[in-house]
Image (tube, rainbow, N blue to C red; front, side, top):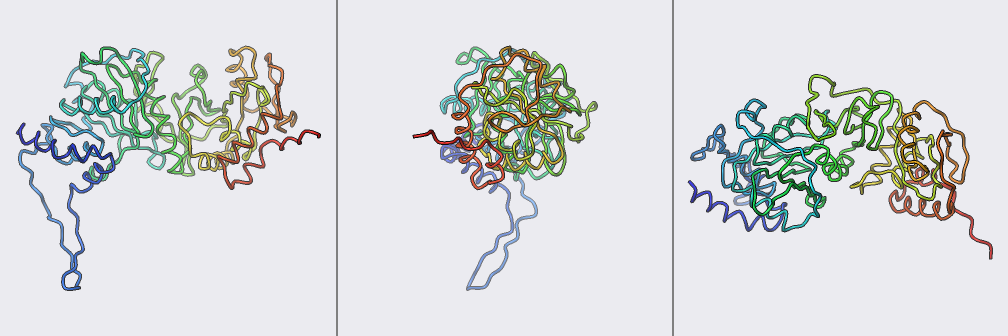
Length: 431
């Protein structure tokens, strides 16, 4: 059995070296389907076999051909047993423990990625197929592949339960690869992620706060491509704050997702300050009412963007795309469209962290914004909300306005309504 497994691995490795796309093709080819053929110019259909028997397959013991093919699509050629979506008691029975220590951030590289896949390939694997987004219409699939049952259990508690569907059709948007076994090559806990490869690599720990941050950088564009606006932050019915630091005034942590289909939390669990996961499965509904306000944050050091402002729908789209989008967002046109749509139901505010003398005032001011009204003033013609905090003197307003308009023209091509919601173009200097 070992020899046959090694032989299969040697066959698949060349395909995997050509990239994830080839592996995904192999995954889809694993199950037969009716095929249309032609003979003597007359078409006929060859039906797929009703049942295929594989030698030594035993899913309960971790020998599943379908799962092995699927793992090849995720970039790992399994050479040992693998288990998928075990229940929490089953994962607990497998034993083990995890560290939630804050990991070292390391730069993602192809050698690191290849080494991680090679290490996991020879180990017993626990696969959890989950989702970000607690409504089916708002979800992005995410897969955890780990050599630790305890890590898989924590991930299962954190993310939304996977949706049904044939394994051969499963395609995650984010792959989390976690090695927990002691390793002489990798002595300390670390985390790294590569957006182009849609992968987060972790070793020696599962700190949920760090993991969420890395998943968000990869998943944001995947949400937008599905017509879903991810709102990374925390909040409750009154307001959602798209920044860290609002946990003390929030009912739900780690983010939300909005689409025309509904509003929901992003995760099934919640992490405390130390990175330990607690399940909220029975405490918070999946679908929740949209918040009364969304507060987003800019970092304009020139203080041309006011400390606080109330935005209309087009302004919210403009400043989201030019100043407030999360790390990892590149699909600005989709983001602007969704922000405008959500702003028909929710009031958007903007806080400029760069305008405050004392950074501690940012949280206090933002937490008090929902329900307040602004009045038009300043070089950007925004509805400025007065704040009870010391703010900086305004810098070069024309230069900032010009930079914002240039960003909008690049990121929101053809979106005239959005571009016109920005500042007026600065007057040319007199000759």
